[in-house]
Picture 1 (cartoon, helix red, strand yellow):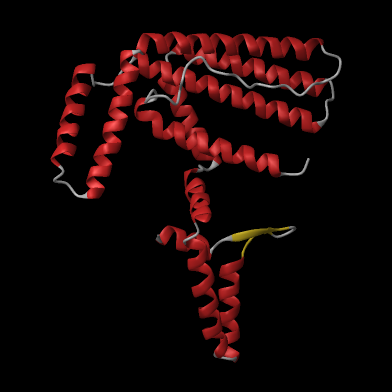
Picture 2 (cartoon, rainbow, N blue to C red; picture 1 turned 180 degrees about the vertical axis):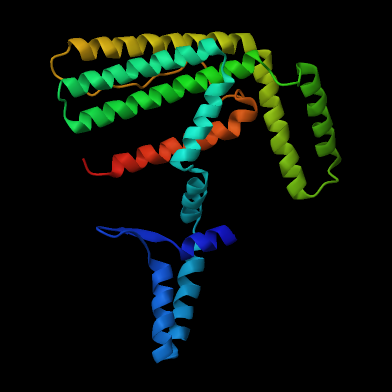
Length: 273
């Protein structure tokens, strides 16, 4: 709760020419300064902040915004996490990713050469970055499927039975039961993924090949079309990257990057052209 109260106190609004202004903090400062001239302002400021800050902090929508912002990484942290994910891959997959990135850069260069309008270049560049991120996620998922952690299907089954037994006994506190239930759900997803590993690997390879061909098509179209066009990179995957724990211990990094990229995309879309 302290996190929500702190965020509510420092909540800001965008002011043209000034950037983001922390209105609550500034108001508290103003009441504090005025209070030296008239102590009544201290009581007034305390009453205002005691009303506004908790009301905002306990608002479910505001809490969701705070949680989303807490997952957003700085540009440097995001790039480091992305590079760490790339380092996991074997040299062939790293080369495959670089080839896609090079072709995407060629597409953007073609549009610049054609003197396309800036909004088309920016839109296409962002779409291609999204496509590269999806390609990296597929490669990381396949890496973990082909190089599994120490757990085997038998060890997962043993852990699942132990947790199910603990939950049946009902001797733990409610918070511990919820934690164990969440862990049990994750283990069952991992077990299901392990059982259909070969099928999932084949689906991922199909998705990778599809993206390879789509990038080739985008580059070809950009080269032969006389008028620059806004490109679409929406792809319906054959594999289900959200249907199981396919990212292993890198799932938290994937989630953080996913949230960060989504936040940045939303901010870009809100900015005037």
